[in-house]
Image 1 (cartoon, rainbow, N blue to C red):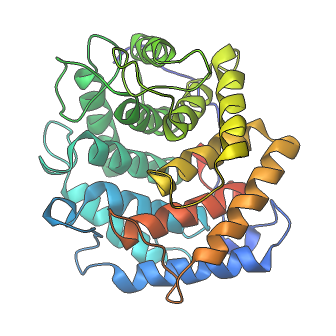
Image 2 (cartoon, one colour; image 1 turned 90 degrees about the horizontal axis):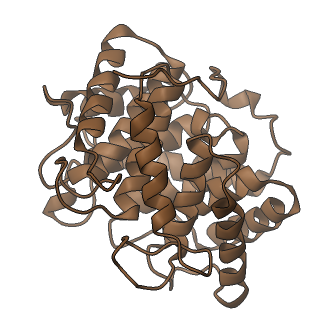
Amino acid sequence: MGIVWTVLFAVASVEPEAAALVPRNPAVEAAVSKALDYLQATQSGDGSWGGRGSSYSRHVGITGLCGMAFMSAGHLPGRGKHGKNVDDALAFVLSMVGRDGYIGTKESGMYGHGFAALFLGEVYGMSPRPELGRSVRLATELSVRAQKEDGGWRYEPVSYGYSDVSVTTCIIMSLRAARNAGVDVPKETIEKAVNYLRQCVNPDGGLRYMVMDQGESRPALTAAAVISFYGLGRYDLPEINRGVTFLENYHRTVPFSTKYPHYYYSLYYEAQAMYQVGGERWKQWYADVSSELIRTQAQDGSWSDYVGNAYATAMAALVLEVPYSYLPIFQR
């Protein structure tokens, strides 16, 4: 399937008690623990989670994010307090892998496929079982075939039409996870994806939704592109520093608040981008965001969003867990 890409990040099996990678923060740990208990309590019998509306029921993407939320706290298949939750989530997602490699239903689209494939890739990196590897390779091959001529991806698993930055970065992260676990990804696929994102950069350093869209820069898309450039190994691109500067300027006037659109989605990518930047910029960002998330967590351990509480809770937990570096995609 093309050129084999070198694994850039070490993969390690860890237990929750080994989280000495960052200074212990009791408030953060308590918030994460409550969030995971909430997800445990709301997992369906078939291992899935869903959201609001019929199109989000038994959703492979949301299930993948919830599974990764457990893994980001050190709970692996068969290991840790929530190991069974990961096992059940994994079983559900694997049951939704089609013969062509597409994961999910028609309604879940390439977003669902991307987040589900990311979850499978992260599990496979930590637990390299042959049957899991086959599903990761199938999902990766589907993503490669669905890449559009302009270099990106969109809602449907087809290679014609136009792309958008949001779906493109979602698929890129799943390809990165697969590649990190030793699955082949063609060099051409990577190069086309990088070129597509670079074409979407506005003069202010932020990214717009599509190449032909002359709209304003969006923080969520900018952060997603920054971490995609990192994930694809293109640390030398000037678009990285320009993107981070855009994010910092944006938050000088717009505080962290659920009032701005796609809040948890944006924080999910911003956390990863700022963590890669590191230093005082990361420390200040994380201090501000973790305080806000702890303040807004509901009594039952959840956060809420128009997509649904499971989605928002998984995303918030993943943000809080980034500095633990359990998941390969969260490692520097």
